[in-house]
Image 1 (cartoon, each protein chain N blue to C red):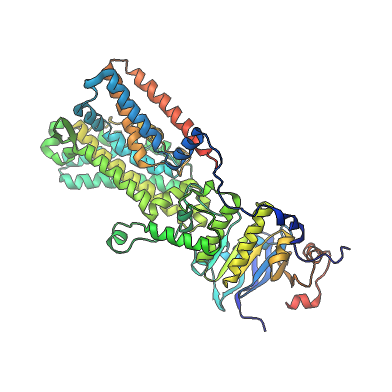
Image 2: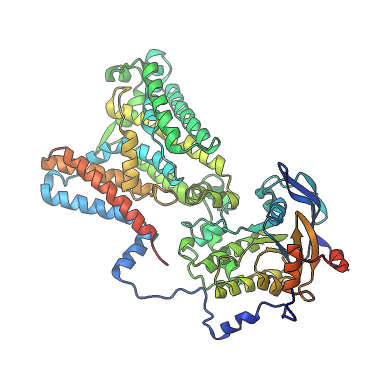
Length: 260
Length: 359
């Protein structure tokens, strides 16, 4: 038997006027796995992810987190429930430091009167935790935690965003095209980072167009087509051309793929 | 679809990487010229430029006109003269840090001061209540700006251009363009003139207003750098979408910034009664332009997210030093305007250069 699912969706529906972005879409994410979501442009995968992260509210269907039904009205609600997202544009503030960015929106205040009456931030503590989180993921080549994010390279920024998600995502980390803007070397580093996050027990949803990356690190691949889950394939038994054929409709899925 | 037996891993095409340099994220101490060092130092600490300009300004005028400029009395007089611009500049800094601009600050200041004076003088309201009412009016004005910017999502320039006229006209209609004389204010509500009270330390003459202005700057320096709210103000000006996705309630924070700015402008309205003695509906009409000047010369970026409220105080002092120095030196006052204008352009050029810093 499979381990119990962390995040599931059944029959999600989202319409924009007469356009059906999601037509009864299902989704399953299991504990400790990397699930890749692939699909052609317009297949509805970004709407699916937005529904799971609270960026859009589905018109119908059910989302369960750890077996309990949930509904997210905004991204903050999903975040509070333990679902962290690394957005494609990273959502980092360029002029703020690495430490400030890691704690943006969830700052830690000083203990005692300084914190309660004067609302003073506990900067040393935030710096220390930020440094710990970055070194846990092997990112301490970033030396100066007070460095503005805009002075970092693309890969380093991605590292900061991933570290932030991994540090605060208690249930699920969702990554939208994490390697799309990166060079070969930096992509490799980020893929290692994703594996590192999984080894710490966090399940990851990876949205990507990069087939080699998907086939290398995903445990299962969710193929999205025409607003719904077409099938789930195993990267160890299927090939990239199988995946491309399925997501473009050149081939119908085998019955055992539907069961997965 | 006839591709056969391709290994399902993507690692193969990266085999060539094996021999490549594996360092990704380290910072090579590349050879830098002194100019690069300066650029980096300024990037890390943008207030350095205005501090240098201020020091050079004081030194130059100290040499040009000597003791007449370089004495405690003159230097503290400059501090008194920049009190109003300094206070309004704090409000303007908050708004410019969010990548906005507020053209209505001067109008809010004068409207609030007129409300304070009219209530105390014509309606016999006790001075503390009149003061409180003035502060409330300032906050309401700020709330109108804030709601239009943060929730209706109109551009701040247009919103505050409109409310500038609205608040200014309201002020003239309400006050019927009547000035309340200084002796009437001191007879009815001396509290309103409190910030104009001066005291001496040796040759230095300070007003409570000047001290209040410096305290306000220090308070907001603390708030902007050491509270979550302050960090959020910077984050919103830097990249509003990123701030929202990071979980900051951007609308609420932005609204709060405009309300706070309105309150600070009303405090400036209190200070201007102390400075003038009287309550005049025609006072402070240039406060909006002067405050933007102080903010820009103080090194805060008009594009938001970068700068410091300490810089604004320095910027206001630079304008004060040049105005005073050139006057004592005996030049035409237009030379002051010319100098300040050149400084604005230089400050914006410096900001653009600093932004281009490379890692």
